[in-house]
Image (cartoon, rainbow, N blue to C red):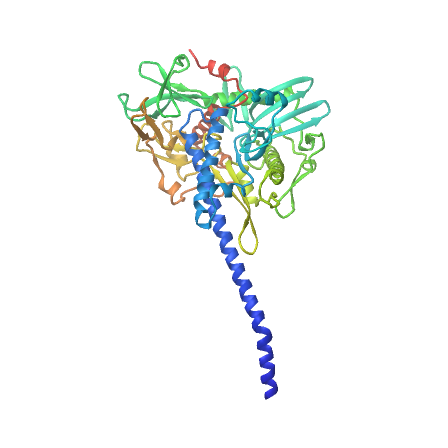
Length: 555
């Protein structure tokens, strides 16, 4: 009996310290996990605040797509991020200056490229340095560590096939820019890629997916509340809305929310109808003919993609190391117009997404690696593996990707990132950006998602497709900014079941195109396709010459 007591004492002497150490270890791990979850939440909140600031700035700006305005909006969003994250981490003992050292990059993915906001060394060439020596007000210093936007990076890829050598710049939809040489010709062209298009030259009729696209009634919006009843006819040209007064003069709304009279007139173009949707499909048809018949690019495949050194691109892997796209093995025809280019699973879309991911992933990895050279924290910053669901966000809409690395959270070092997308912005018109108003002539009419059950039978020629951004609240004020008030461009009511309950929506269809093709009544398809084309055609495009483009609509 005594022997068992001795053994029990020995067991307690041995196991008690082990259990205490193990208990302490488990407690530390739990504290670390709680802290990591807390940091993830704080990072998500700050990223959301930044992308929301970007949305508000762009929605209330008619010049948000012009380069300088876009940079201004992004820098304001970056400031919002650091202000928010400093507030969220204040209780943890970190201020803004300290936290900025642990943020190696913010990535703003936009329509046809992206900005990286991160620290870098301000390098000056000899000529600039000499000029600044005699300028006492200059703020630039060579070799100084600066945090700001790096040059814009396009979603571009080079292709070499025989004598063909072109660079194609992709976007978040089916708009591409082609530059280079092919078929013995120099190319500098851009446009939308669409399948299922026909054009009758004698009648000028354009048909898309069996639906004839024509003019639609002039568009109208409310602007505040004045003697005109607040509602104005408008046209949108290269991202800017021009509104028509009763006396036939035109004006725009400035970033500060005031009227800006325009010297030019669009009365010759304005004829109570809007043909932007028709232009979208007609120009896409012409672009298709140039690609196939004039440039001879119909046989270009993903295997022809090369890097900046002319080496073939190989593959893209997911976060588990599985190959999800092999450039050399895919052999997708990029301009295969018989493949329903617009649909999500087309060869073009698969390749477009692969190129965007390749460009973002590689440039971001370089930016994070370079931060180790200019950063002030003794931590090896590196590109984390982004989850596939996060890549889905990045590749399909405007996003902000934020990184926070190097903070101690007890048992390990924090290495987190956040991806927040924004589906209401002036950058891109996606297939889900168009809402359907049942009766444009009734301000109390409801608007729905295009897949709302019953729309096939309830729409008619008075129905209207509206860009979702145009339902957002905007600001308006006097020229002296003495008074400012808010208004909504449209007074239509949002469908409760569409946006809150998210019921009464058609299921069993892989995409909107298949759904609209299934209906025997083509009125809904015509309204939707016309609105989608109108809004995409009206967006700002870098490739266009603004003066030449707007000249088509002037008196």
